[in-house]
Length: 592
Image (cartoon, rainbow, N blue to C red):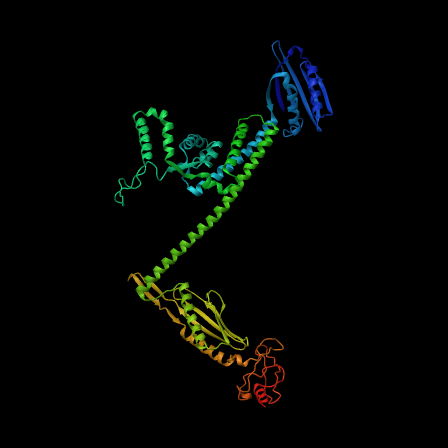
């Protein structure tokens, strides 16, 4: 339903109700390209017509009220479907009004359900935008400045405004009288003031500073950090202003500008809220956001104060609110991600500190037990460290035993003793055979418990197991004697197991990994695996077949027997594939 009235017809002597309304609607029909207009009721003071526009039917009623002094014409525009969001309704009401406005002195809008619908739609978004910024400001300020940021940093006028309103709101809503509602109680325009707020502090070299009492340099007439002549003059003026105010408090109104100027000269920015707290989260600068928010505040007040809203204002306001909502939502998303990371880091720090504290308490308790009983109760890391030291020393012994063997490669990986792993490998550089030592740990740091580390030595066809033990100490508190009494003595059983393992490895290396020098390897590759690991021993180095550890020409990598050449004069085996002459025979022939 749309109702408005045109007041005081210009040249009212010539006003003829029927012809005038006919003329107006024909013009509207032409301007809107309508195909249907029909007046179905024609009374002396009321005329009614149907009007079709973009396949939508409307009822338009004109009611005239005339006296000797004035003429008024009331217009009702009705959409039978009662769909106030219909955009054709907006076009029709505006076109009728515009067609008549030049003929009348005033136009008064009486009712507009479409404008009310626009206001209701916009006000929901207004609440969403306002509250999202309130939420973001509160979240950032509480995180950065703590729970007392409002009382500690905000200017007095905002705090006073909040206090005056807060008491009223709390009386009306007793269920919420114990919550913090500061930003919900202040004006929309004040939110942008908070974003751009700055706090100030005295400059380090202000005129209020104290000169240094001691001057380390002799011969100076004044102490270090003394006021300059200009600074003394400024301080004198400030004191003069304050003296005048103290003498007559009413003079502060007159002297206020001078006092403010003098104080500003001595202050510098301490906290810039936008730069320090909000800029990292917004994708625009302060100027743009402030401009958008000020425009939003103006439009918001228009909606909140029940002013008429047309389609252009609705679209404009929707666009500006969408842009603001996007900027705030992006900032909120970035800040939430940041706080999650910071919270996770903080919780990790708290957990770490708690673990350190617990370990310290446990260490202190174990130390007190050891002092009282002589019994050691080791934690898991200490047990592992002791085992690691013994294992490292044992495998160092093995490497030292065979330090002269260039054909063997030793690789030791210090075990974590948290899981099964290969900790020691001995590999023959020629045959590529290896010996592996695998550790199987079972660590139990409970008082009185036994931890076992099993060493499993594996080679091609042999396997042996060696166990190492540690029994943790245990004590109990005797209430009668008010001290700790020993229950289980701590002790290590690793020497025997490691010694047996070392002897086994030494024997295994000597029997299964005989030393092979570079002189025992031929200069030809194996015709099967192409590795240079073909066994060869010159006749000068051997005492016959009995000294050969491998067959002549045997590949120590894959076992294939390769054919080597012979000397065509003396039948010696040659370090080559083809038959030829050995060095001795070549020398003999050359000498003939």
